[in-house]
Structures are given as C-alpha cells and as structure tokens.
Length: 310
Image 1 (tube, rainbow, N blue to C red):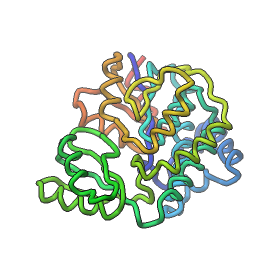
Image 2 (spheres, rainbow, N blue to C red):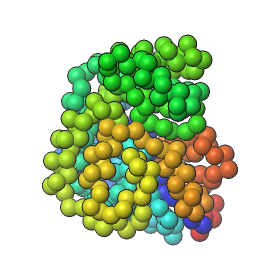
Image 3 (tube, helix red, strand yellow):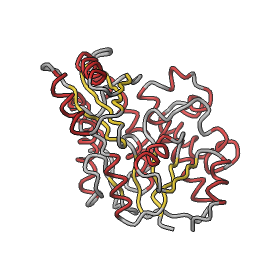
Image 4 (spheres, rainbow, N blue to C red):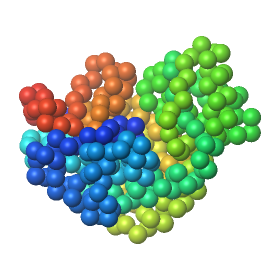
C-alpha cells in the first residue's frame, strides 16, 4: 500500500507523550537521549513530566514534539517494514518530515526548532499578537473577513486546515475584530492559546534570524519526496529547503491542498507519526474516505501492525 507519513505541529503536545515508547523501545530511549545531549537540557523530562506550562512554551514545545515524533518514527521503522511514498508535516512537522527524509540531521533539526520557537516569541511583544480558528466559513469569505477587520493592522489566514476550519493570525486587536465579525456573519470563532502569531507577516523578523541558523546547517538530498507547507507541492531539490522553511514562517500552511497533493500522487493511506491525532482528525474532515492511522505509543503501533499495510 502506498503510504504518506505525516507529522504533527504545535498544539499536539501533552504531558506524558512518548513515555511508553521510551520505556519499551531502545531506539526511542536513544532518541530522547540524543535530543537531551544536542539541546543541553532534559527535553525528555519535559515531555514525560511537564509541567504543562513549561511544555507549552513555544521554544520547548517545538523540540519536544519533533523529538517525540522522531522517536515514534524510529520505532515504526524498526518494528515494521513500512516505508513512505512521501512525507509531509504541519508547520513544525515539516521539519520532522525533512529529518525523516534525511535532509536535516536530527540533532541539527532539534536545535533549529528550539531557535525557531525562541525567534517566533521574540518577533512580536507578548500580548500584541494572536490567532483564532474560524469555523464554518469558506476560504474566500475568510479572506474578505480579514480585509474588513484589519483597520491598518495585520490579520490574515494562517492555516487552511480543512473545509470549514481556517486559522487566522496577526495583531491581537485585528484578530479580535475578525472574530466578532465572523460571529456576525454566522460563523464560529475560537481564540487559540498561543504565544506567537504564526504564519503571518509579523513573523518576517523571525524568518530573517532563522535564515542565519539555516546557513550553518548542511542540507542533504531528499531520500523521500516532501510536500512543503508554503507551496503545497514537493520540494524540487535540497537547494530550496532554506527558502521554503523561511517562507513557511510568514505564509499560510496550505494543509488541505497538501493532502490533495498527496492523494493525487497515489497515496492510499496516511500514518500520523507523533503525539496526538490532530492530523487524522483533519483528514477525516477533508475526505471521509481517506484511510488514516497514528503511531504515538505501543497500542497505536500494534493497530498499525494489525492493519497489514504492506
């Protein structure tokens, strides 16, 4: 069966993630130890024990999710013969996909996303940015909503997740106005608990700082095709990796289109690898016929093994 391996982004984290993998699989334990050494801190303790408030800090969340996802991938790779046709990840998950494709080393990536999280938080003063999910409104209407709510500030679509779920991002005041207007227009709006207005033009300063970190890293050829968030298309070569990762910070995540791209490229089933089932939930809303599985612990691994996806 032709499989897409997909990797979650920020918001999928929870205290205790990866603990059962660490306890039961040598390769997972080694992955966490590798991350601890690369970062110079016990990211494993943060994943397994929290506290939740510290785990939710962007510069902690990102390396924690990436490490847990790679631990799960390595367990899947050692315990099953499954190989991907292609790879994709949601926002932060794109970095995990690039590690899985051997474009970035795991140690480089875990340090890189910690810096990414720090730069994102520092790009906009605390409390001046925000994000909200707009539910029950189509793309063109959300774009119109943002234009009317901007009033000289930044607010724009940030994540095109699935039909009827689009996340907006920008200045806090503009996001609040957009939420109020959305409700007037008959949609539902939910303020997200995030510290940075991701995937908006307010992240451009973070992108400039991130580019300097990327210059220090060796980028290798892609072992497996990877779909980029910014283009909803395959990376054409390793030469575009730096550019696409920088653009990703200040451009929308085109997830619904990315899934469509994977399907058009013959994908028959998706395996979400890492904490939670957020992407599996989005897949069901994009197309109920799509087969999806997740791997985040021993039980979910057994379910994948029982599904006989080879």
